[in-house]
Length: 542
Image (cartoon, rainbow, N blue to C red; front, top):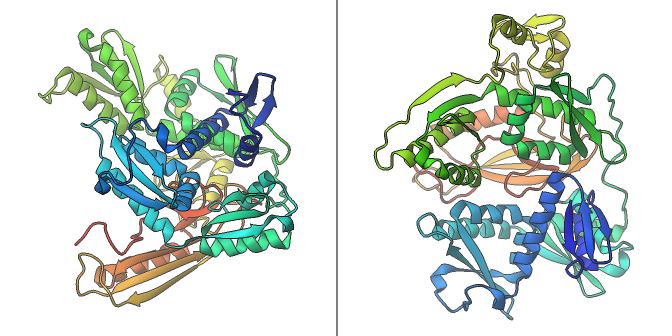
């Protein structure tokens, strides 16, 4: 829940918030505005309002006033329309540049239609304004490759601005919709999508992009029992992922004590489809993955340094290192992913032994969240199915890795991905959920950096938009398509990689449907962790 200032909350802002986060509940009181929703929704609202303040902040209110003519080498000049588009569509990515390089982005717009962007160090010892500038410039160049804008006559579109934005957002996540006076709409985004949006609005086919879908919840759980200690650790380590489960499935996660355990219930917030069983399944998967790969380490700590622990914990959180730190009898207990535990342990060592690099006394032990470790409990844990976390029924033992599952759980898991859920050993050919598309290769008579004398293999991927299938995150919902161009050197190694990429494409593994990690756009075709070179310049050289 959030409370907003009534004077700040204009009618135009209300429409924009409704278009951006339609599931939020907004209640206007005489002196304030009450906004309620899931934790993740409120986080999104906070980010949206921050972005509005950042883009709308007048140049004369900048803390350090500066003119575009000052220190040109430190500035990036961008057309104001393009800057506004980038800050709206790629806001999460720009915020990440500020956090990653520890800089503040300042802007100054001119009457000629240009915006000058400057990157100021927040902490000289930790900031990298040059890298921030380069990353921002690379993003601008990438966007401008096929960026344009179109105007649409408002008189032919019988919808409100918020309805237009929602209709467009449901179908094209990279399009920015603005109103120009009372007569026109301005559309900004990829050139090939703009013509589609303009035709869509002028044609008047405003049926919802959310196609009706029937989802069977029979035999699917909406309640699960979780060990209290497991739940406590999970919420500290995976709070972002838990918030995403709530938002993606439009549910509220509730907890209550039951017979020494935590009963976790998933309740749908809005009308059908009820995705609470699917939220439950995602939560179970998250729980399994977290505790299959977790470590506990105890670090002896000098009492004189205890005041620095909370500072370190905040610093780790800012770096994206999610870890549980607990204090017990002159020691700090670290719980988390082994890589994060090792990193935090190193930082603790540095605090106590600056400049010497000596390891602190540490006792490393396997994660055990219960006090009792007798043989009976170990046997009970071994007899639990890794998928449903209940006692194994109709046991099936995998041939290669010897992990045991319920027969029904294993069949469901293998239908989704033929690998062991515990260790990842493959059982058969893995087929991904890449949507229908094309992969085309050509050869260009120019060389990539570091491969002088070699031609360049150009790979073009093209995926039209469509409706998500049952193996996608939101079955029945529209997803936006994409086009990508990648490059390989035309030599022996490049041809070998091309052959592997063709095989991965045939197995539908290169792309997937989901949320873009770079733009934050949802329900779109995005990369599936198979790295490609997407620019003719830059990158590692031979």
